[in-house]
Length: 463
RNA sequence: GUGGAUGUAGUUCAGUCGGUUAGAACGUCGGAUUGUGGUUCCGAAAGUCGUGGGUUCGAGCCCCAUCUUCCACCCCA
Image 1 (cartoon, rainbow, N blue to C red):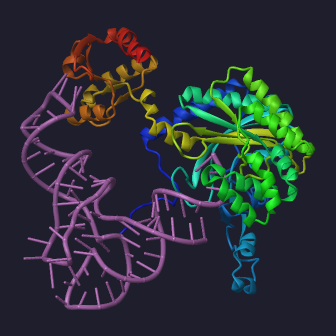
Image 2 (image 1 turned 180 degrees about the vertical axis):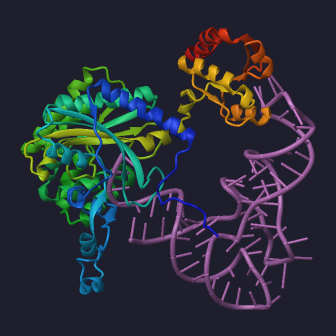
Image 3 (image 1 turned 90 degrees about the horizontal axis):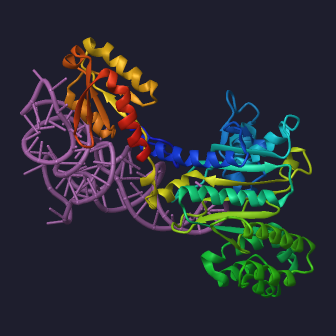
């Protein structure tokens, strides 16, 4: 009859258990964001396609979910166009909205649109789902949550430093060991100039980004496929094979690309940033990685990517500086820098490392047994006392068998059950059962308050 | 967009060479126990074998198509 219910490809339901864990991640991230002075905003799930298109490169445009216009969406399409079946042209006529692809572009739109209300530098965070029409696979979903922090309207490299500090802080709290990789788009441009292929910066960066995965030989092969001269490729080799610590790498590179003005600017930016980092309390490893490229083509300065040391799942956090993203919406000269935490991947990492064990799954603490109409009023009194004391409490809704009510408490891992039937009511008593030990105590209703303070609250703080 | 796997009860999976009425565990529900959970014992419900075609006397099993999910590439969080 009715087909089995299902959800679209690449989307997920979150169970009650999963939600508690997810909320723990979001809360931790949010707390740190606030601690550094960032404030929340939200933007709509859908944006006008004109806002979205062209910001993520050709690949990104393909991955946008487009929303079919309502009503007679074919009204502006003539038969000829229909017969030609050109999806690109057709979709621009029948769709004017799309689901957001990330939070950075909508943020840039927000800033430009509300420029008169915003005080700069503007520090905001935003935690919302985004959608990509990608093929789902491990750690990749079509609907997933990003947690973005950005500061816009300030060129200072202190912002870059602060974001790295935030990354460090959050992953310390979540107890994930991470490696932060840093590079600078200006340095990449410098390298491209140095080997005489300044125009092909995108091809070059995309290729060298893969060096970890496919090795240096394959990268060279790909570069020559893209049409780079063998001279350019051989010029590139010393750059790819730089070794040493962050500072020696920078010095060596500085000599190599000394003729490129942007390249030198990038190097000096990196020097400043690393100086901040070395003199600070940052704990996780921060590494200069000249092969880090990142696809989003709006980045212009620092680029940052964070990986888990223990779990290979792609990056769990990434971002960078974009000097002119607001420019495409008609507001020039406003520079921003931001990073995005991938909550879903962080979840997968915590799960695989079993780090959720330490998360207190807080749920109902006391279940009050339901005996029926006669006893309900008395139960109400108990509920009120407990809730006034901030103890989360529920009354079983049906007066069924006690066995059922007890197994309910057991499956929900409720630690205390209060039994108040005919006998107890007569003497203004209650019976409290401590599930973990099976111990059962009969006390006066008046004593409930002190029981909560002595037993429940204590168990909570010692946890 | 390219390539490879997959689909049987709510879940995880068996299912022989193509042969009668489709199997288990877990979970769910009921009972053993009408005021007591976890353990145990007994019992029950639950499946159009992803969908649509085809081959065959006969298909969960073979063939074709299609969809789903998963994995890799591309790209990315």
